[in-house]
Amino acid sequence: MKRLWRWLIPLAAVPVLVLLAYGFRLSPRDIPSPLVGRPAPGFALATLEGAPLELATHRGKVVVLNFWASWCYPACYEEAPVLERNWRGYRERGVVVVGVDVQDKREAALKFVGDFGLTFPVAQDLKGTVSVDYGVYGVPETFFLDRQGRIRVKHVGAVTDDVFRTTVDRLLAEAASP
Amino acid sequence: MSRVRIAVLAALALIGSVASPIAAQTATPVSEDAVHDIALQLRCVVCQNLSVADSPSEMASQMRAIIRERLAAGESPTEVQRYFVDRYGEWILLSPPRRGFNLLVWLLPLAAVVVGLATAGALVWRWTRRRRGVRPPPVTVDAAMSERIRRELESGS
Image 1 (tube, each protein chain N blue to C red):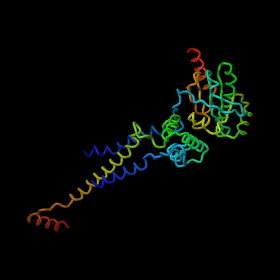
Image 2: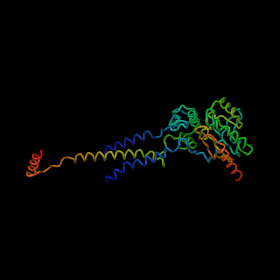
Image 3: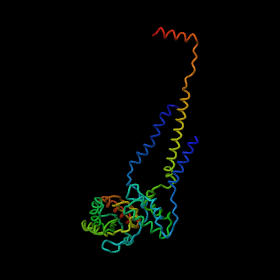
């Protein structure tokens, strides 16, 4: 009995240690989005130049929806050339890149767009409603929508050429063979 | 043991009062209190451990505006909370809902308190019993033996 007690107390710490070991390995930034697989929330914003930008008009295309901000350094600065390069490469194949600028000043956003020579449509989410609709935590976050308008992939952090191409190629291939 | 029971009840009451959802039943004419009550239960997504009500960030203020708008549109506080949970998952709630696996979070601390109090009680009981038992037993020494001891002590020194 006495021997059992001597072991029981240190043993009681084991489940706690296991729990802590598991918990501390998780990144608090890695949160699964409940939106993956669901229809993408629609929105109607205005581009930085003032033209209307509606998600619904791009139905039938693979949409790469990128949330960014000019103050988001360095990740947004790393991915801007990637997005522009791939937008140019894929735009003839039924792919559209849409930028949503969040919590930003219009002048700063315009300067960012000018500096990187971005040619894809960029809108400002002034009230934050679109960001919340997409469950955005921070910038950059990128959503890949299929031709049926469903959110298929959510990418947190800067988009790389590899991520862009593999994801978009997969969605394009899938849409071609229904 | 009744003291243990009182402590457990007190712990229960304390946990209950902290965890009970804040009742916010006001509807369409939106009061700031109603907005605050909902914001208090939502995690500010760009902060560490701050509610949307407490955070000064722009994101949180935009989220408060969204809460206000949805309440003004006639949604109930539960529906507004649902809206955020649908988009961010249960992660957005500062206190996990008390059902399923989440119950563990609510019950484990309670269980720990009960086990801890029981262990402490048992140990105290054992220690006090041992002290009572350590009283020196009466020693019976017959006359011959005490004579012998006396003799050996004297000759030895």
